[in-house]
Image (cartoon, rainbow, N blue to C red; front, side):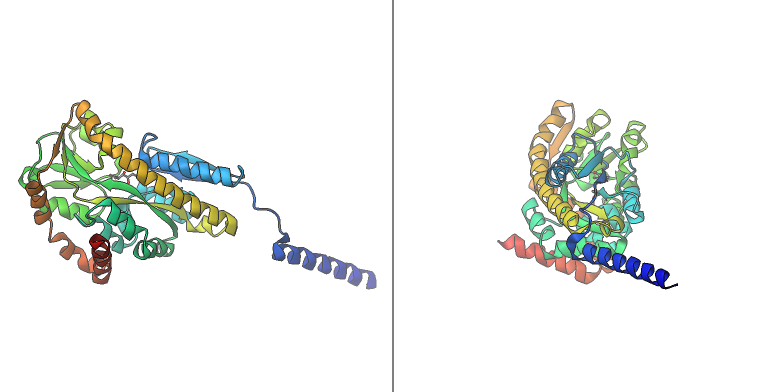
Length: 340
Ligand code: TK8
C-alpha cells in the first residue's frame, strides 16, 4: 500500500513539473499548420495578387512552418458561403466585399451607400482609422476575426442593351447586384429591375440574357471577361466597395500569439500592396475594355451629378436599419478627412 502511495506521489510531481514547464514558455514550439484562403475573383485579379503577397510574407516569416493555400474563382463557394465556413471553423480565411456582410450585421450597409466616399484617399483614411477598426472588431460577434480592409473599388455599370448616360437610360434594365438591400434599393430607385446573385453565376446569366447587366470595378469587368457578353460600360462610380480580409474566429482562438501577430501583420501589409496593385491595374482596365470591343462611357460632371441626385434619398431610407449614429459617425469621419 505504501509503495502505491509513493508511486502516485512521483506521478503527480511529474505532471506538475510538465505543466509548469509548459506554462513558463517551456512548452513545445508552435506547430506546423496550413491556412486555406478562398476568394470569388480569379487568379489574374488584384485581390489574388494581394493573397500571393500575404502567402509570401507568412511563409517567409514563419520559415515555412505555416503553409498558405489559395483558392480562387469561388472554388470554395461564394462570399456568403465562405463566411459561413469561417464561422463554422471549416475554412481559415476569405476576403468578401462588405456588401454580403450586411447579411450578418446590418450596420455594414453603411459602406454600400451610393456615392459615400469622395475618393480612395478618404476611403483609406476612414477604413484604416478608428471607425474602420471598430467595424473589423465587431465581426468577432459573428465568429469572424476582421484582419484588414482591402479594396474592390469603385463600381461601374455594364449592360448589353443601351449606352447608359443618364438615370433614365437605366429604366427597365435587368441588373445583377450583390446580395445587399442598399444595392437593390439603389437600382430600383434608378428604375432598373435588380436581381441579387452570387458572382459565380453572373457570367452565364449575362450570356443567357437572364440579366442585361451588372456592376463591378473596371478590373473585374475586364479580368472576368464580361466584355464577351456585355457591350457598354458606364463609369458611374456609384458605390465604393471595400473588401474585408478575415479569419475564422474559432480557428484564430487556437493559434499561438506569435502566429496571430504574424497573420495580422501580413494581412495589413498585403492589403497596402493590394490597394496599390488594384489602382495600377484600374488605370489600364478602361483601355483594355475598349480594345476588347466595349463602349466605355465616362460621364460628364452634369451626367454624374444626375446619378447622385437620383439616389440621394437612399441613405435616409436605410438610416434606421444601419443605425443613425453609425451613418453619422462614418459621414463625420469622411467630412474630417475630406477637408484636409
Ligand atoms: C468577390 C466578390 C465580387 C463582388 C461582386 O468575392 O460579387 O460583384 O464585387 O468581386 O466580392
